[in-house]
Image (cartoon, rainbow, N blue to C red; front, top):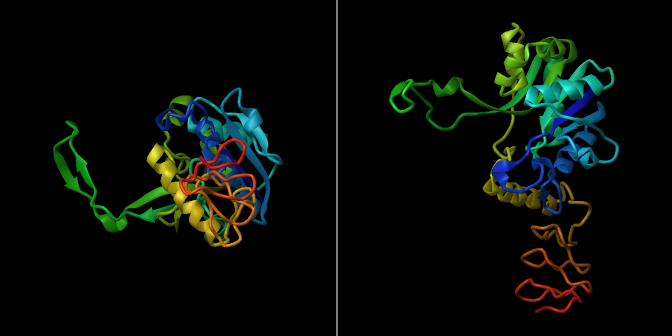
Length: 274
């Protein structure tokens, strides 16, 4: 069995949302809910713990446990892990990656069990040429061998004992960690990669949010997922998640109570287009 820890304590300043990033609306729902839904579809997951900013614990979805996150990412993971039930396998996932599929979580867990390693991380092969620069930040020092480079994502799946040992590091080390797998590496643990896909993006900017919304809308239209169950019978989905009873969808996501959608997509408070 496995417990899942969702890191959702980011403030979202770069999104300019004025609220925690994980609670920003994405296709009609808080972004966090998409990851929770995927994890609930993984049969081995028995508990989901969400690390949220102080003052926002009410943002934890029903059926999950909310804890106050720390000043850094790894401190948030440590706080969530301390609350989690006993389980040999721990999944760590960023709420900012709402497109992670149940299959990706299952594949990472299966690789951990198959390989006997300490951690498995989702990642994609690097497509761009990567250059290392000198200390001046501009002069190219080397071109790195692309075939050996992977861009790391989440989920990251750990053996609990290895993760607990890694998270016992001093605060300065935790603050330097950009992912928890690095903490495993520095203690001599074995980390393996499982291949993810480019659609598992991290939402950091308003552009990322729009791309995530479009990708999720495609999944909903294909019947893979539904934003709160609002799916038009013909498979059409409004970007905001609003669907008319008859299946009509306004371009801006606004729908009249009677199901009619005006040509411009705008709907008056009483349901009349204007």
